[in-house]
Image (cartoon, rainbow, N blue to C red; front, side, top):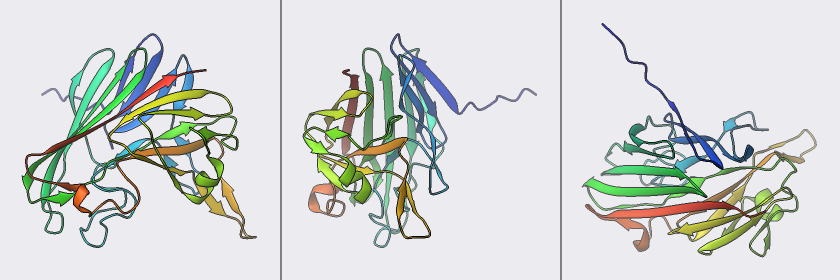
Length: 249
């Protein structure tokens, strides 16, 4: 009897972009533009290891008490299925389990493509159960080899927001300026971004941060969105969101 090896890592490549995707967690392992890292995997100062993942149906501590949801939702540690793949695109999917506290089954699809730009699309469909609140966030780990101390999102300085775990509003088209590079990030459905990087407290009570990456995390809305009337997803409904990254300079 022959045993088929389950492949968890998948790559798609264009002339400019290359993406490595991990089906364990549906995570972006690495994203490169012309050999330069855009999104990556990092050993964090707090002792954990982190990379880009999807947060559905909740972000951070949303729904932990009322709906019994884990931190950052149900999908970041799940085993995703490969649905379709070509040289420059890939589609993966996962169906969430229903529970007594969160009585809905969701079908989630992630679509990735690399051509002149990098495009990430998310589709969440309520396939069974009762109406439930839903939020979507993409926990992007951006590479900052020269640090993030002088970074800007549109007209806002990022360091104070990154250090405090703050948030900023997003436009349809956004400009991210790092010390080493500038990107355009186009979004659909996402109205806010949470800013963060890993840290630890030293023996003197000082915060020490990771400087080699920062997280700019597009989210439908934050805070006080999950559980509101606007967050409710009914049986049969689908909500979609997308991110497009373009290298500027």
